[in-house]
Amino acid sequence: MGLNSAQKEVERGILLTTVDKMSHWAQKSSVWPATFGLACCAIEMMSVTSSRYDLARFGSEAFRASPRQADLMIVAGRVSQKMAPVLRTIWEQMPEPKWVISMGACASSGGVFDNYAIIQGVDHVVPVDVYVPGCPPSPEALMFGILKLREKIQMGLPPKYQEVAMARGGAS
Amino acid sequence: MTNDVGIIERLKNHFAEGLETVTSIDQPTVIVPRGQLLAFAEHLKSVEGYVMFNDVLVVDWFPARPRFEVVYQVYQPETRQRFRFKSFVDESESMPTMTGVWAGANWPEREAFDLFGVVFDGHPDLTRIYLPDDWEGHPLRKDYPTGGNRID
Ligand code: SF4
Image 1 (cartoon, rainbow over the protein chains, first blue to last red):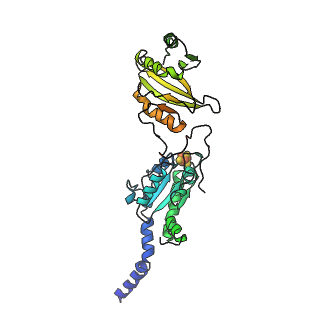
Image 2 (cartoon, rainbow over the protein chains, first blue to last red):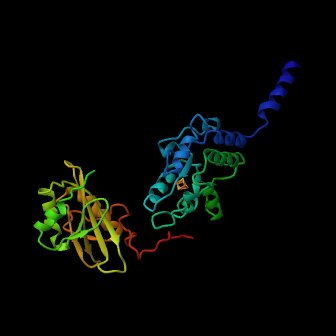
Image 3 (spheres, rainbow over the protein chains, first blue to last red):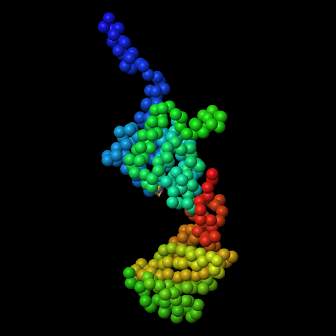
């Protein structure tokens, strides 16, 4: 009898979940960003990993120097016309599933740089999941963006590029 | 930094005519006719000792003619003095390159070509330096559109 009740206890505690939920939880808990800073915003991006803000609490402190090991691209700064193909290549090199945060006014809309050199919004180049406003966004704001992204992953919503592909009717 | 107060006098004596003094608050400045520019630069380097080339700057005076004012900035490291000379050039004309005198003029001249479209005759590799190779136009010209190109 003792064994039976213990078994019930175990079934209630651990097994009442799904593989999906489990994998989403695992994914959201280790979103590794690519080391990719473009301008002043990157300074704030660096500081979120510092001891004061400690992004490590959310499992995202490991900025990978290779896009092959990264899940998240934080576009931190203005994207110049010359940089756009490079940015796109790095994004394409990241393994799926992958996410993009557009950090700051410049990455999201061109910001104050309404001129010939700057792409007016990085969403012209790569599909963006979360936009973080500000010039520069404070580290807290960026962390809020990352937390929003974690929520999105936990809810099982597809990354933006998959959404776009599905909307076009193709296989993701 | 002290200024070389006598230099304009000496240069004017050497290049009988053509040099035009510009009043400036920071350093001696002259305007040199385009034809004399190379000889002037040679003299400045070998006789006056301005061996270091700092930069080429361009001012677009559109719609005035000649359109571009090309400003050269040089330095004499022993006495720690600076000197500036300028010259005018129009769109259809070209400047002599300074790369033969100061090797350091190479990249600054490419920059001036890239952003203003000023052509430097005899430059070893006059190609774009900042913008993508297939860029059209020269963005720092006054008649270039100032806004960013929106895709949507
Ligand atoms: S949004 Fe502001 S801080 Fe960020 S890259 Fe642009 S100018 Fe710099």
